[in-house]
Image (cartoon, rainbow over all chains, first blue to last red; front, side, top):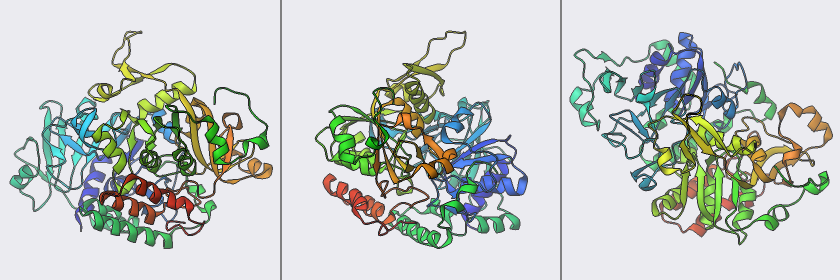
Length: 272
Length: 288
């Protein structure tokens, strides 16, 4: 089992109870987490996201990302359509550049707002979802910071308490305590290591559940849904190695994906 | 498209230079269709990059290589977007550098606030009222997002100003000479952008005849009345994708980000992007 498998399974366990709605995902692990919840726990969430889309072969892929398929669509929901249904339950499994101890997320930049010292790409849909969970696969104090310089969104403003998923833990935002509370800790990670790799203070309950690994059924499904290993890319830090991995996956996809356009069209839409 | 007299259908089919050059002016607002690296009108963007007009305002929902190419050509004064990036190739290096140096202004939106602003423009309304996370810093950096007056007893809503978009350029899978256009997959906000802009130019992978238009009429997302010019441009979204016709040109995009990281000057970066358009069909590294 690789860290991405544990992360995907943690996401699956927590999103499976969400009401039927649209799920946006920004990482392969998040996409797989929703897919596991759909397939193994009867989740009624519908996927729409950039973290790797279904392609006609039924696997996560890079090349088909702009075509955000599901295998069994219930409806065709376009990008404007997603926002037109924003009053309905939907969850954003976001991967901002930074998250801080007040549940603020930043996808804009570091430094003075409007004239950043380090510019990111822009806020995207972070403020727009009714429920926001954060998925930061690599747990590091570079991303889990004391205070962000720019608030793209604050998850603490949402009615549903936010969750934070990393390779090492699951944290839950406490509206009462107004801080992140440790909910699950990965085996092999001690609390001292977690503190050292987190840029903010968090609540430490006396009893913390282990961050369980996926059962055999989930591992088998992960291998089936992501045979090319997109979920491992979230943990590749070296830029050149990441581009090499992308290149390998693109080449592999070229061998797997049907070429005729009519083989794509029946799968358009959004649905589990 | 909200003004002007439509020309007859055959006159809509033209080349990029004729469709764009007579209309480009310093400081005009150009709307860019597509999303991220998908179905971006790169052939039309390359034409704009080659003309004297500059100080452009770019309106794009999610910018990518299109914004990069115009930045490389020195054509941009302001970018209005919810995001600019190169998908899994990471941050857009020229956009990032321009923000950090202050070389451009950036009107930053969330996806929904920008969508609402475009919708207002399409409906010829001066603004729209939308909900927004009250903790968000967006109103601090975008003067087009302001607290809305509480007219009916509630508060916490924001007004977003509708942009005035002089020209929209879009890329489609196929177009009829009359201007009907279709694209498989998600059409993003292209139809809304076309309705919001005063002039609309589309590039198309291919032209279709009456029979194919009738057969695929359910896939039409741009109605002829919103399109002023149709430019045949096979491969016109490269180095981005235009599924189902082709995926991204991986080799070009990789060369781009690596060259940018190595300090390649802007004109060299522009040549890398446009090299994907210059390659004969079928020779792009990412062709599906």
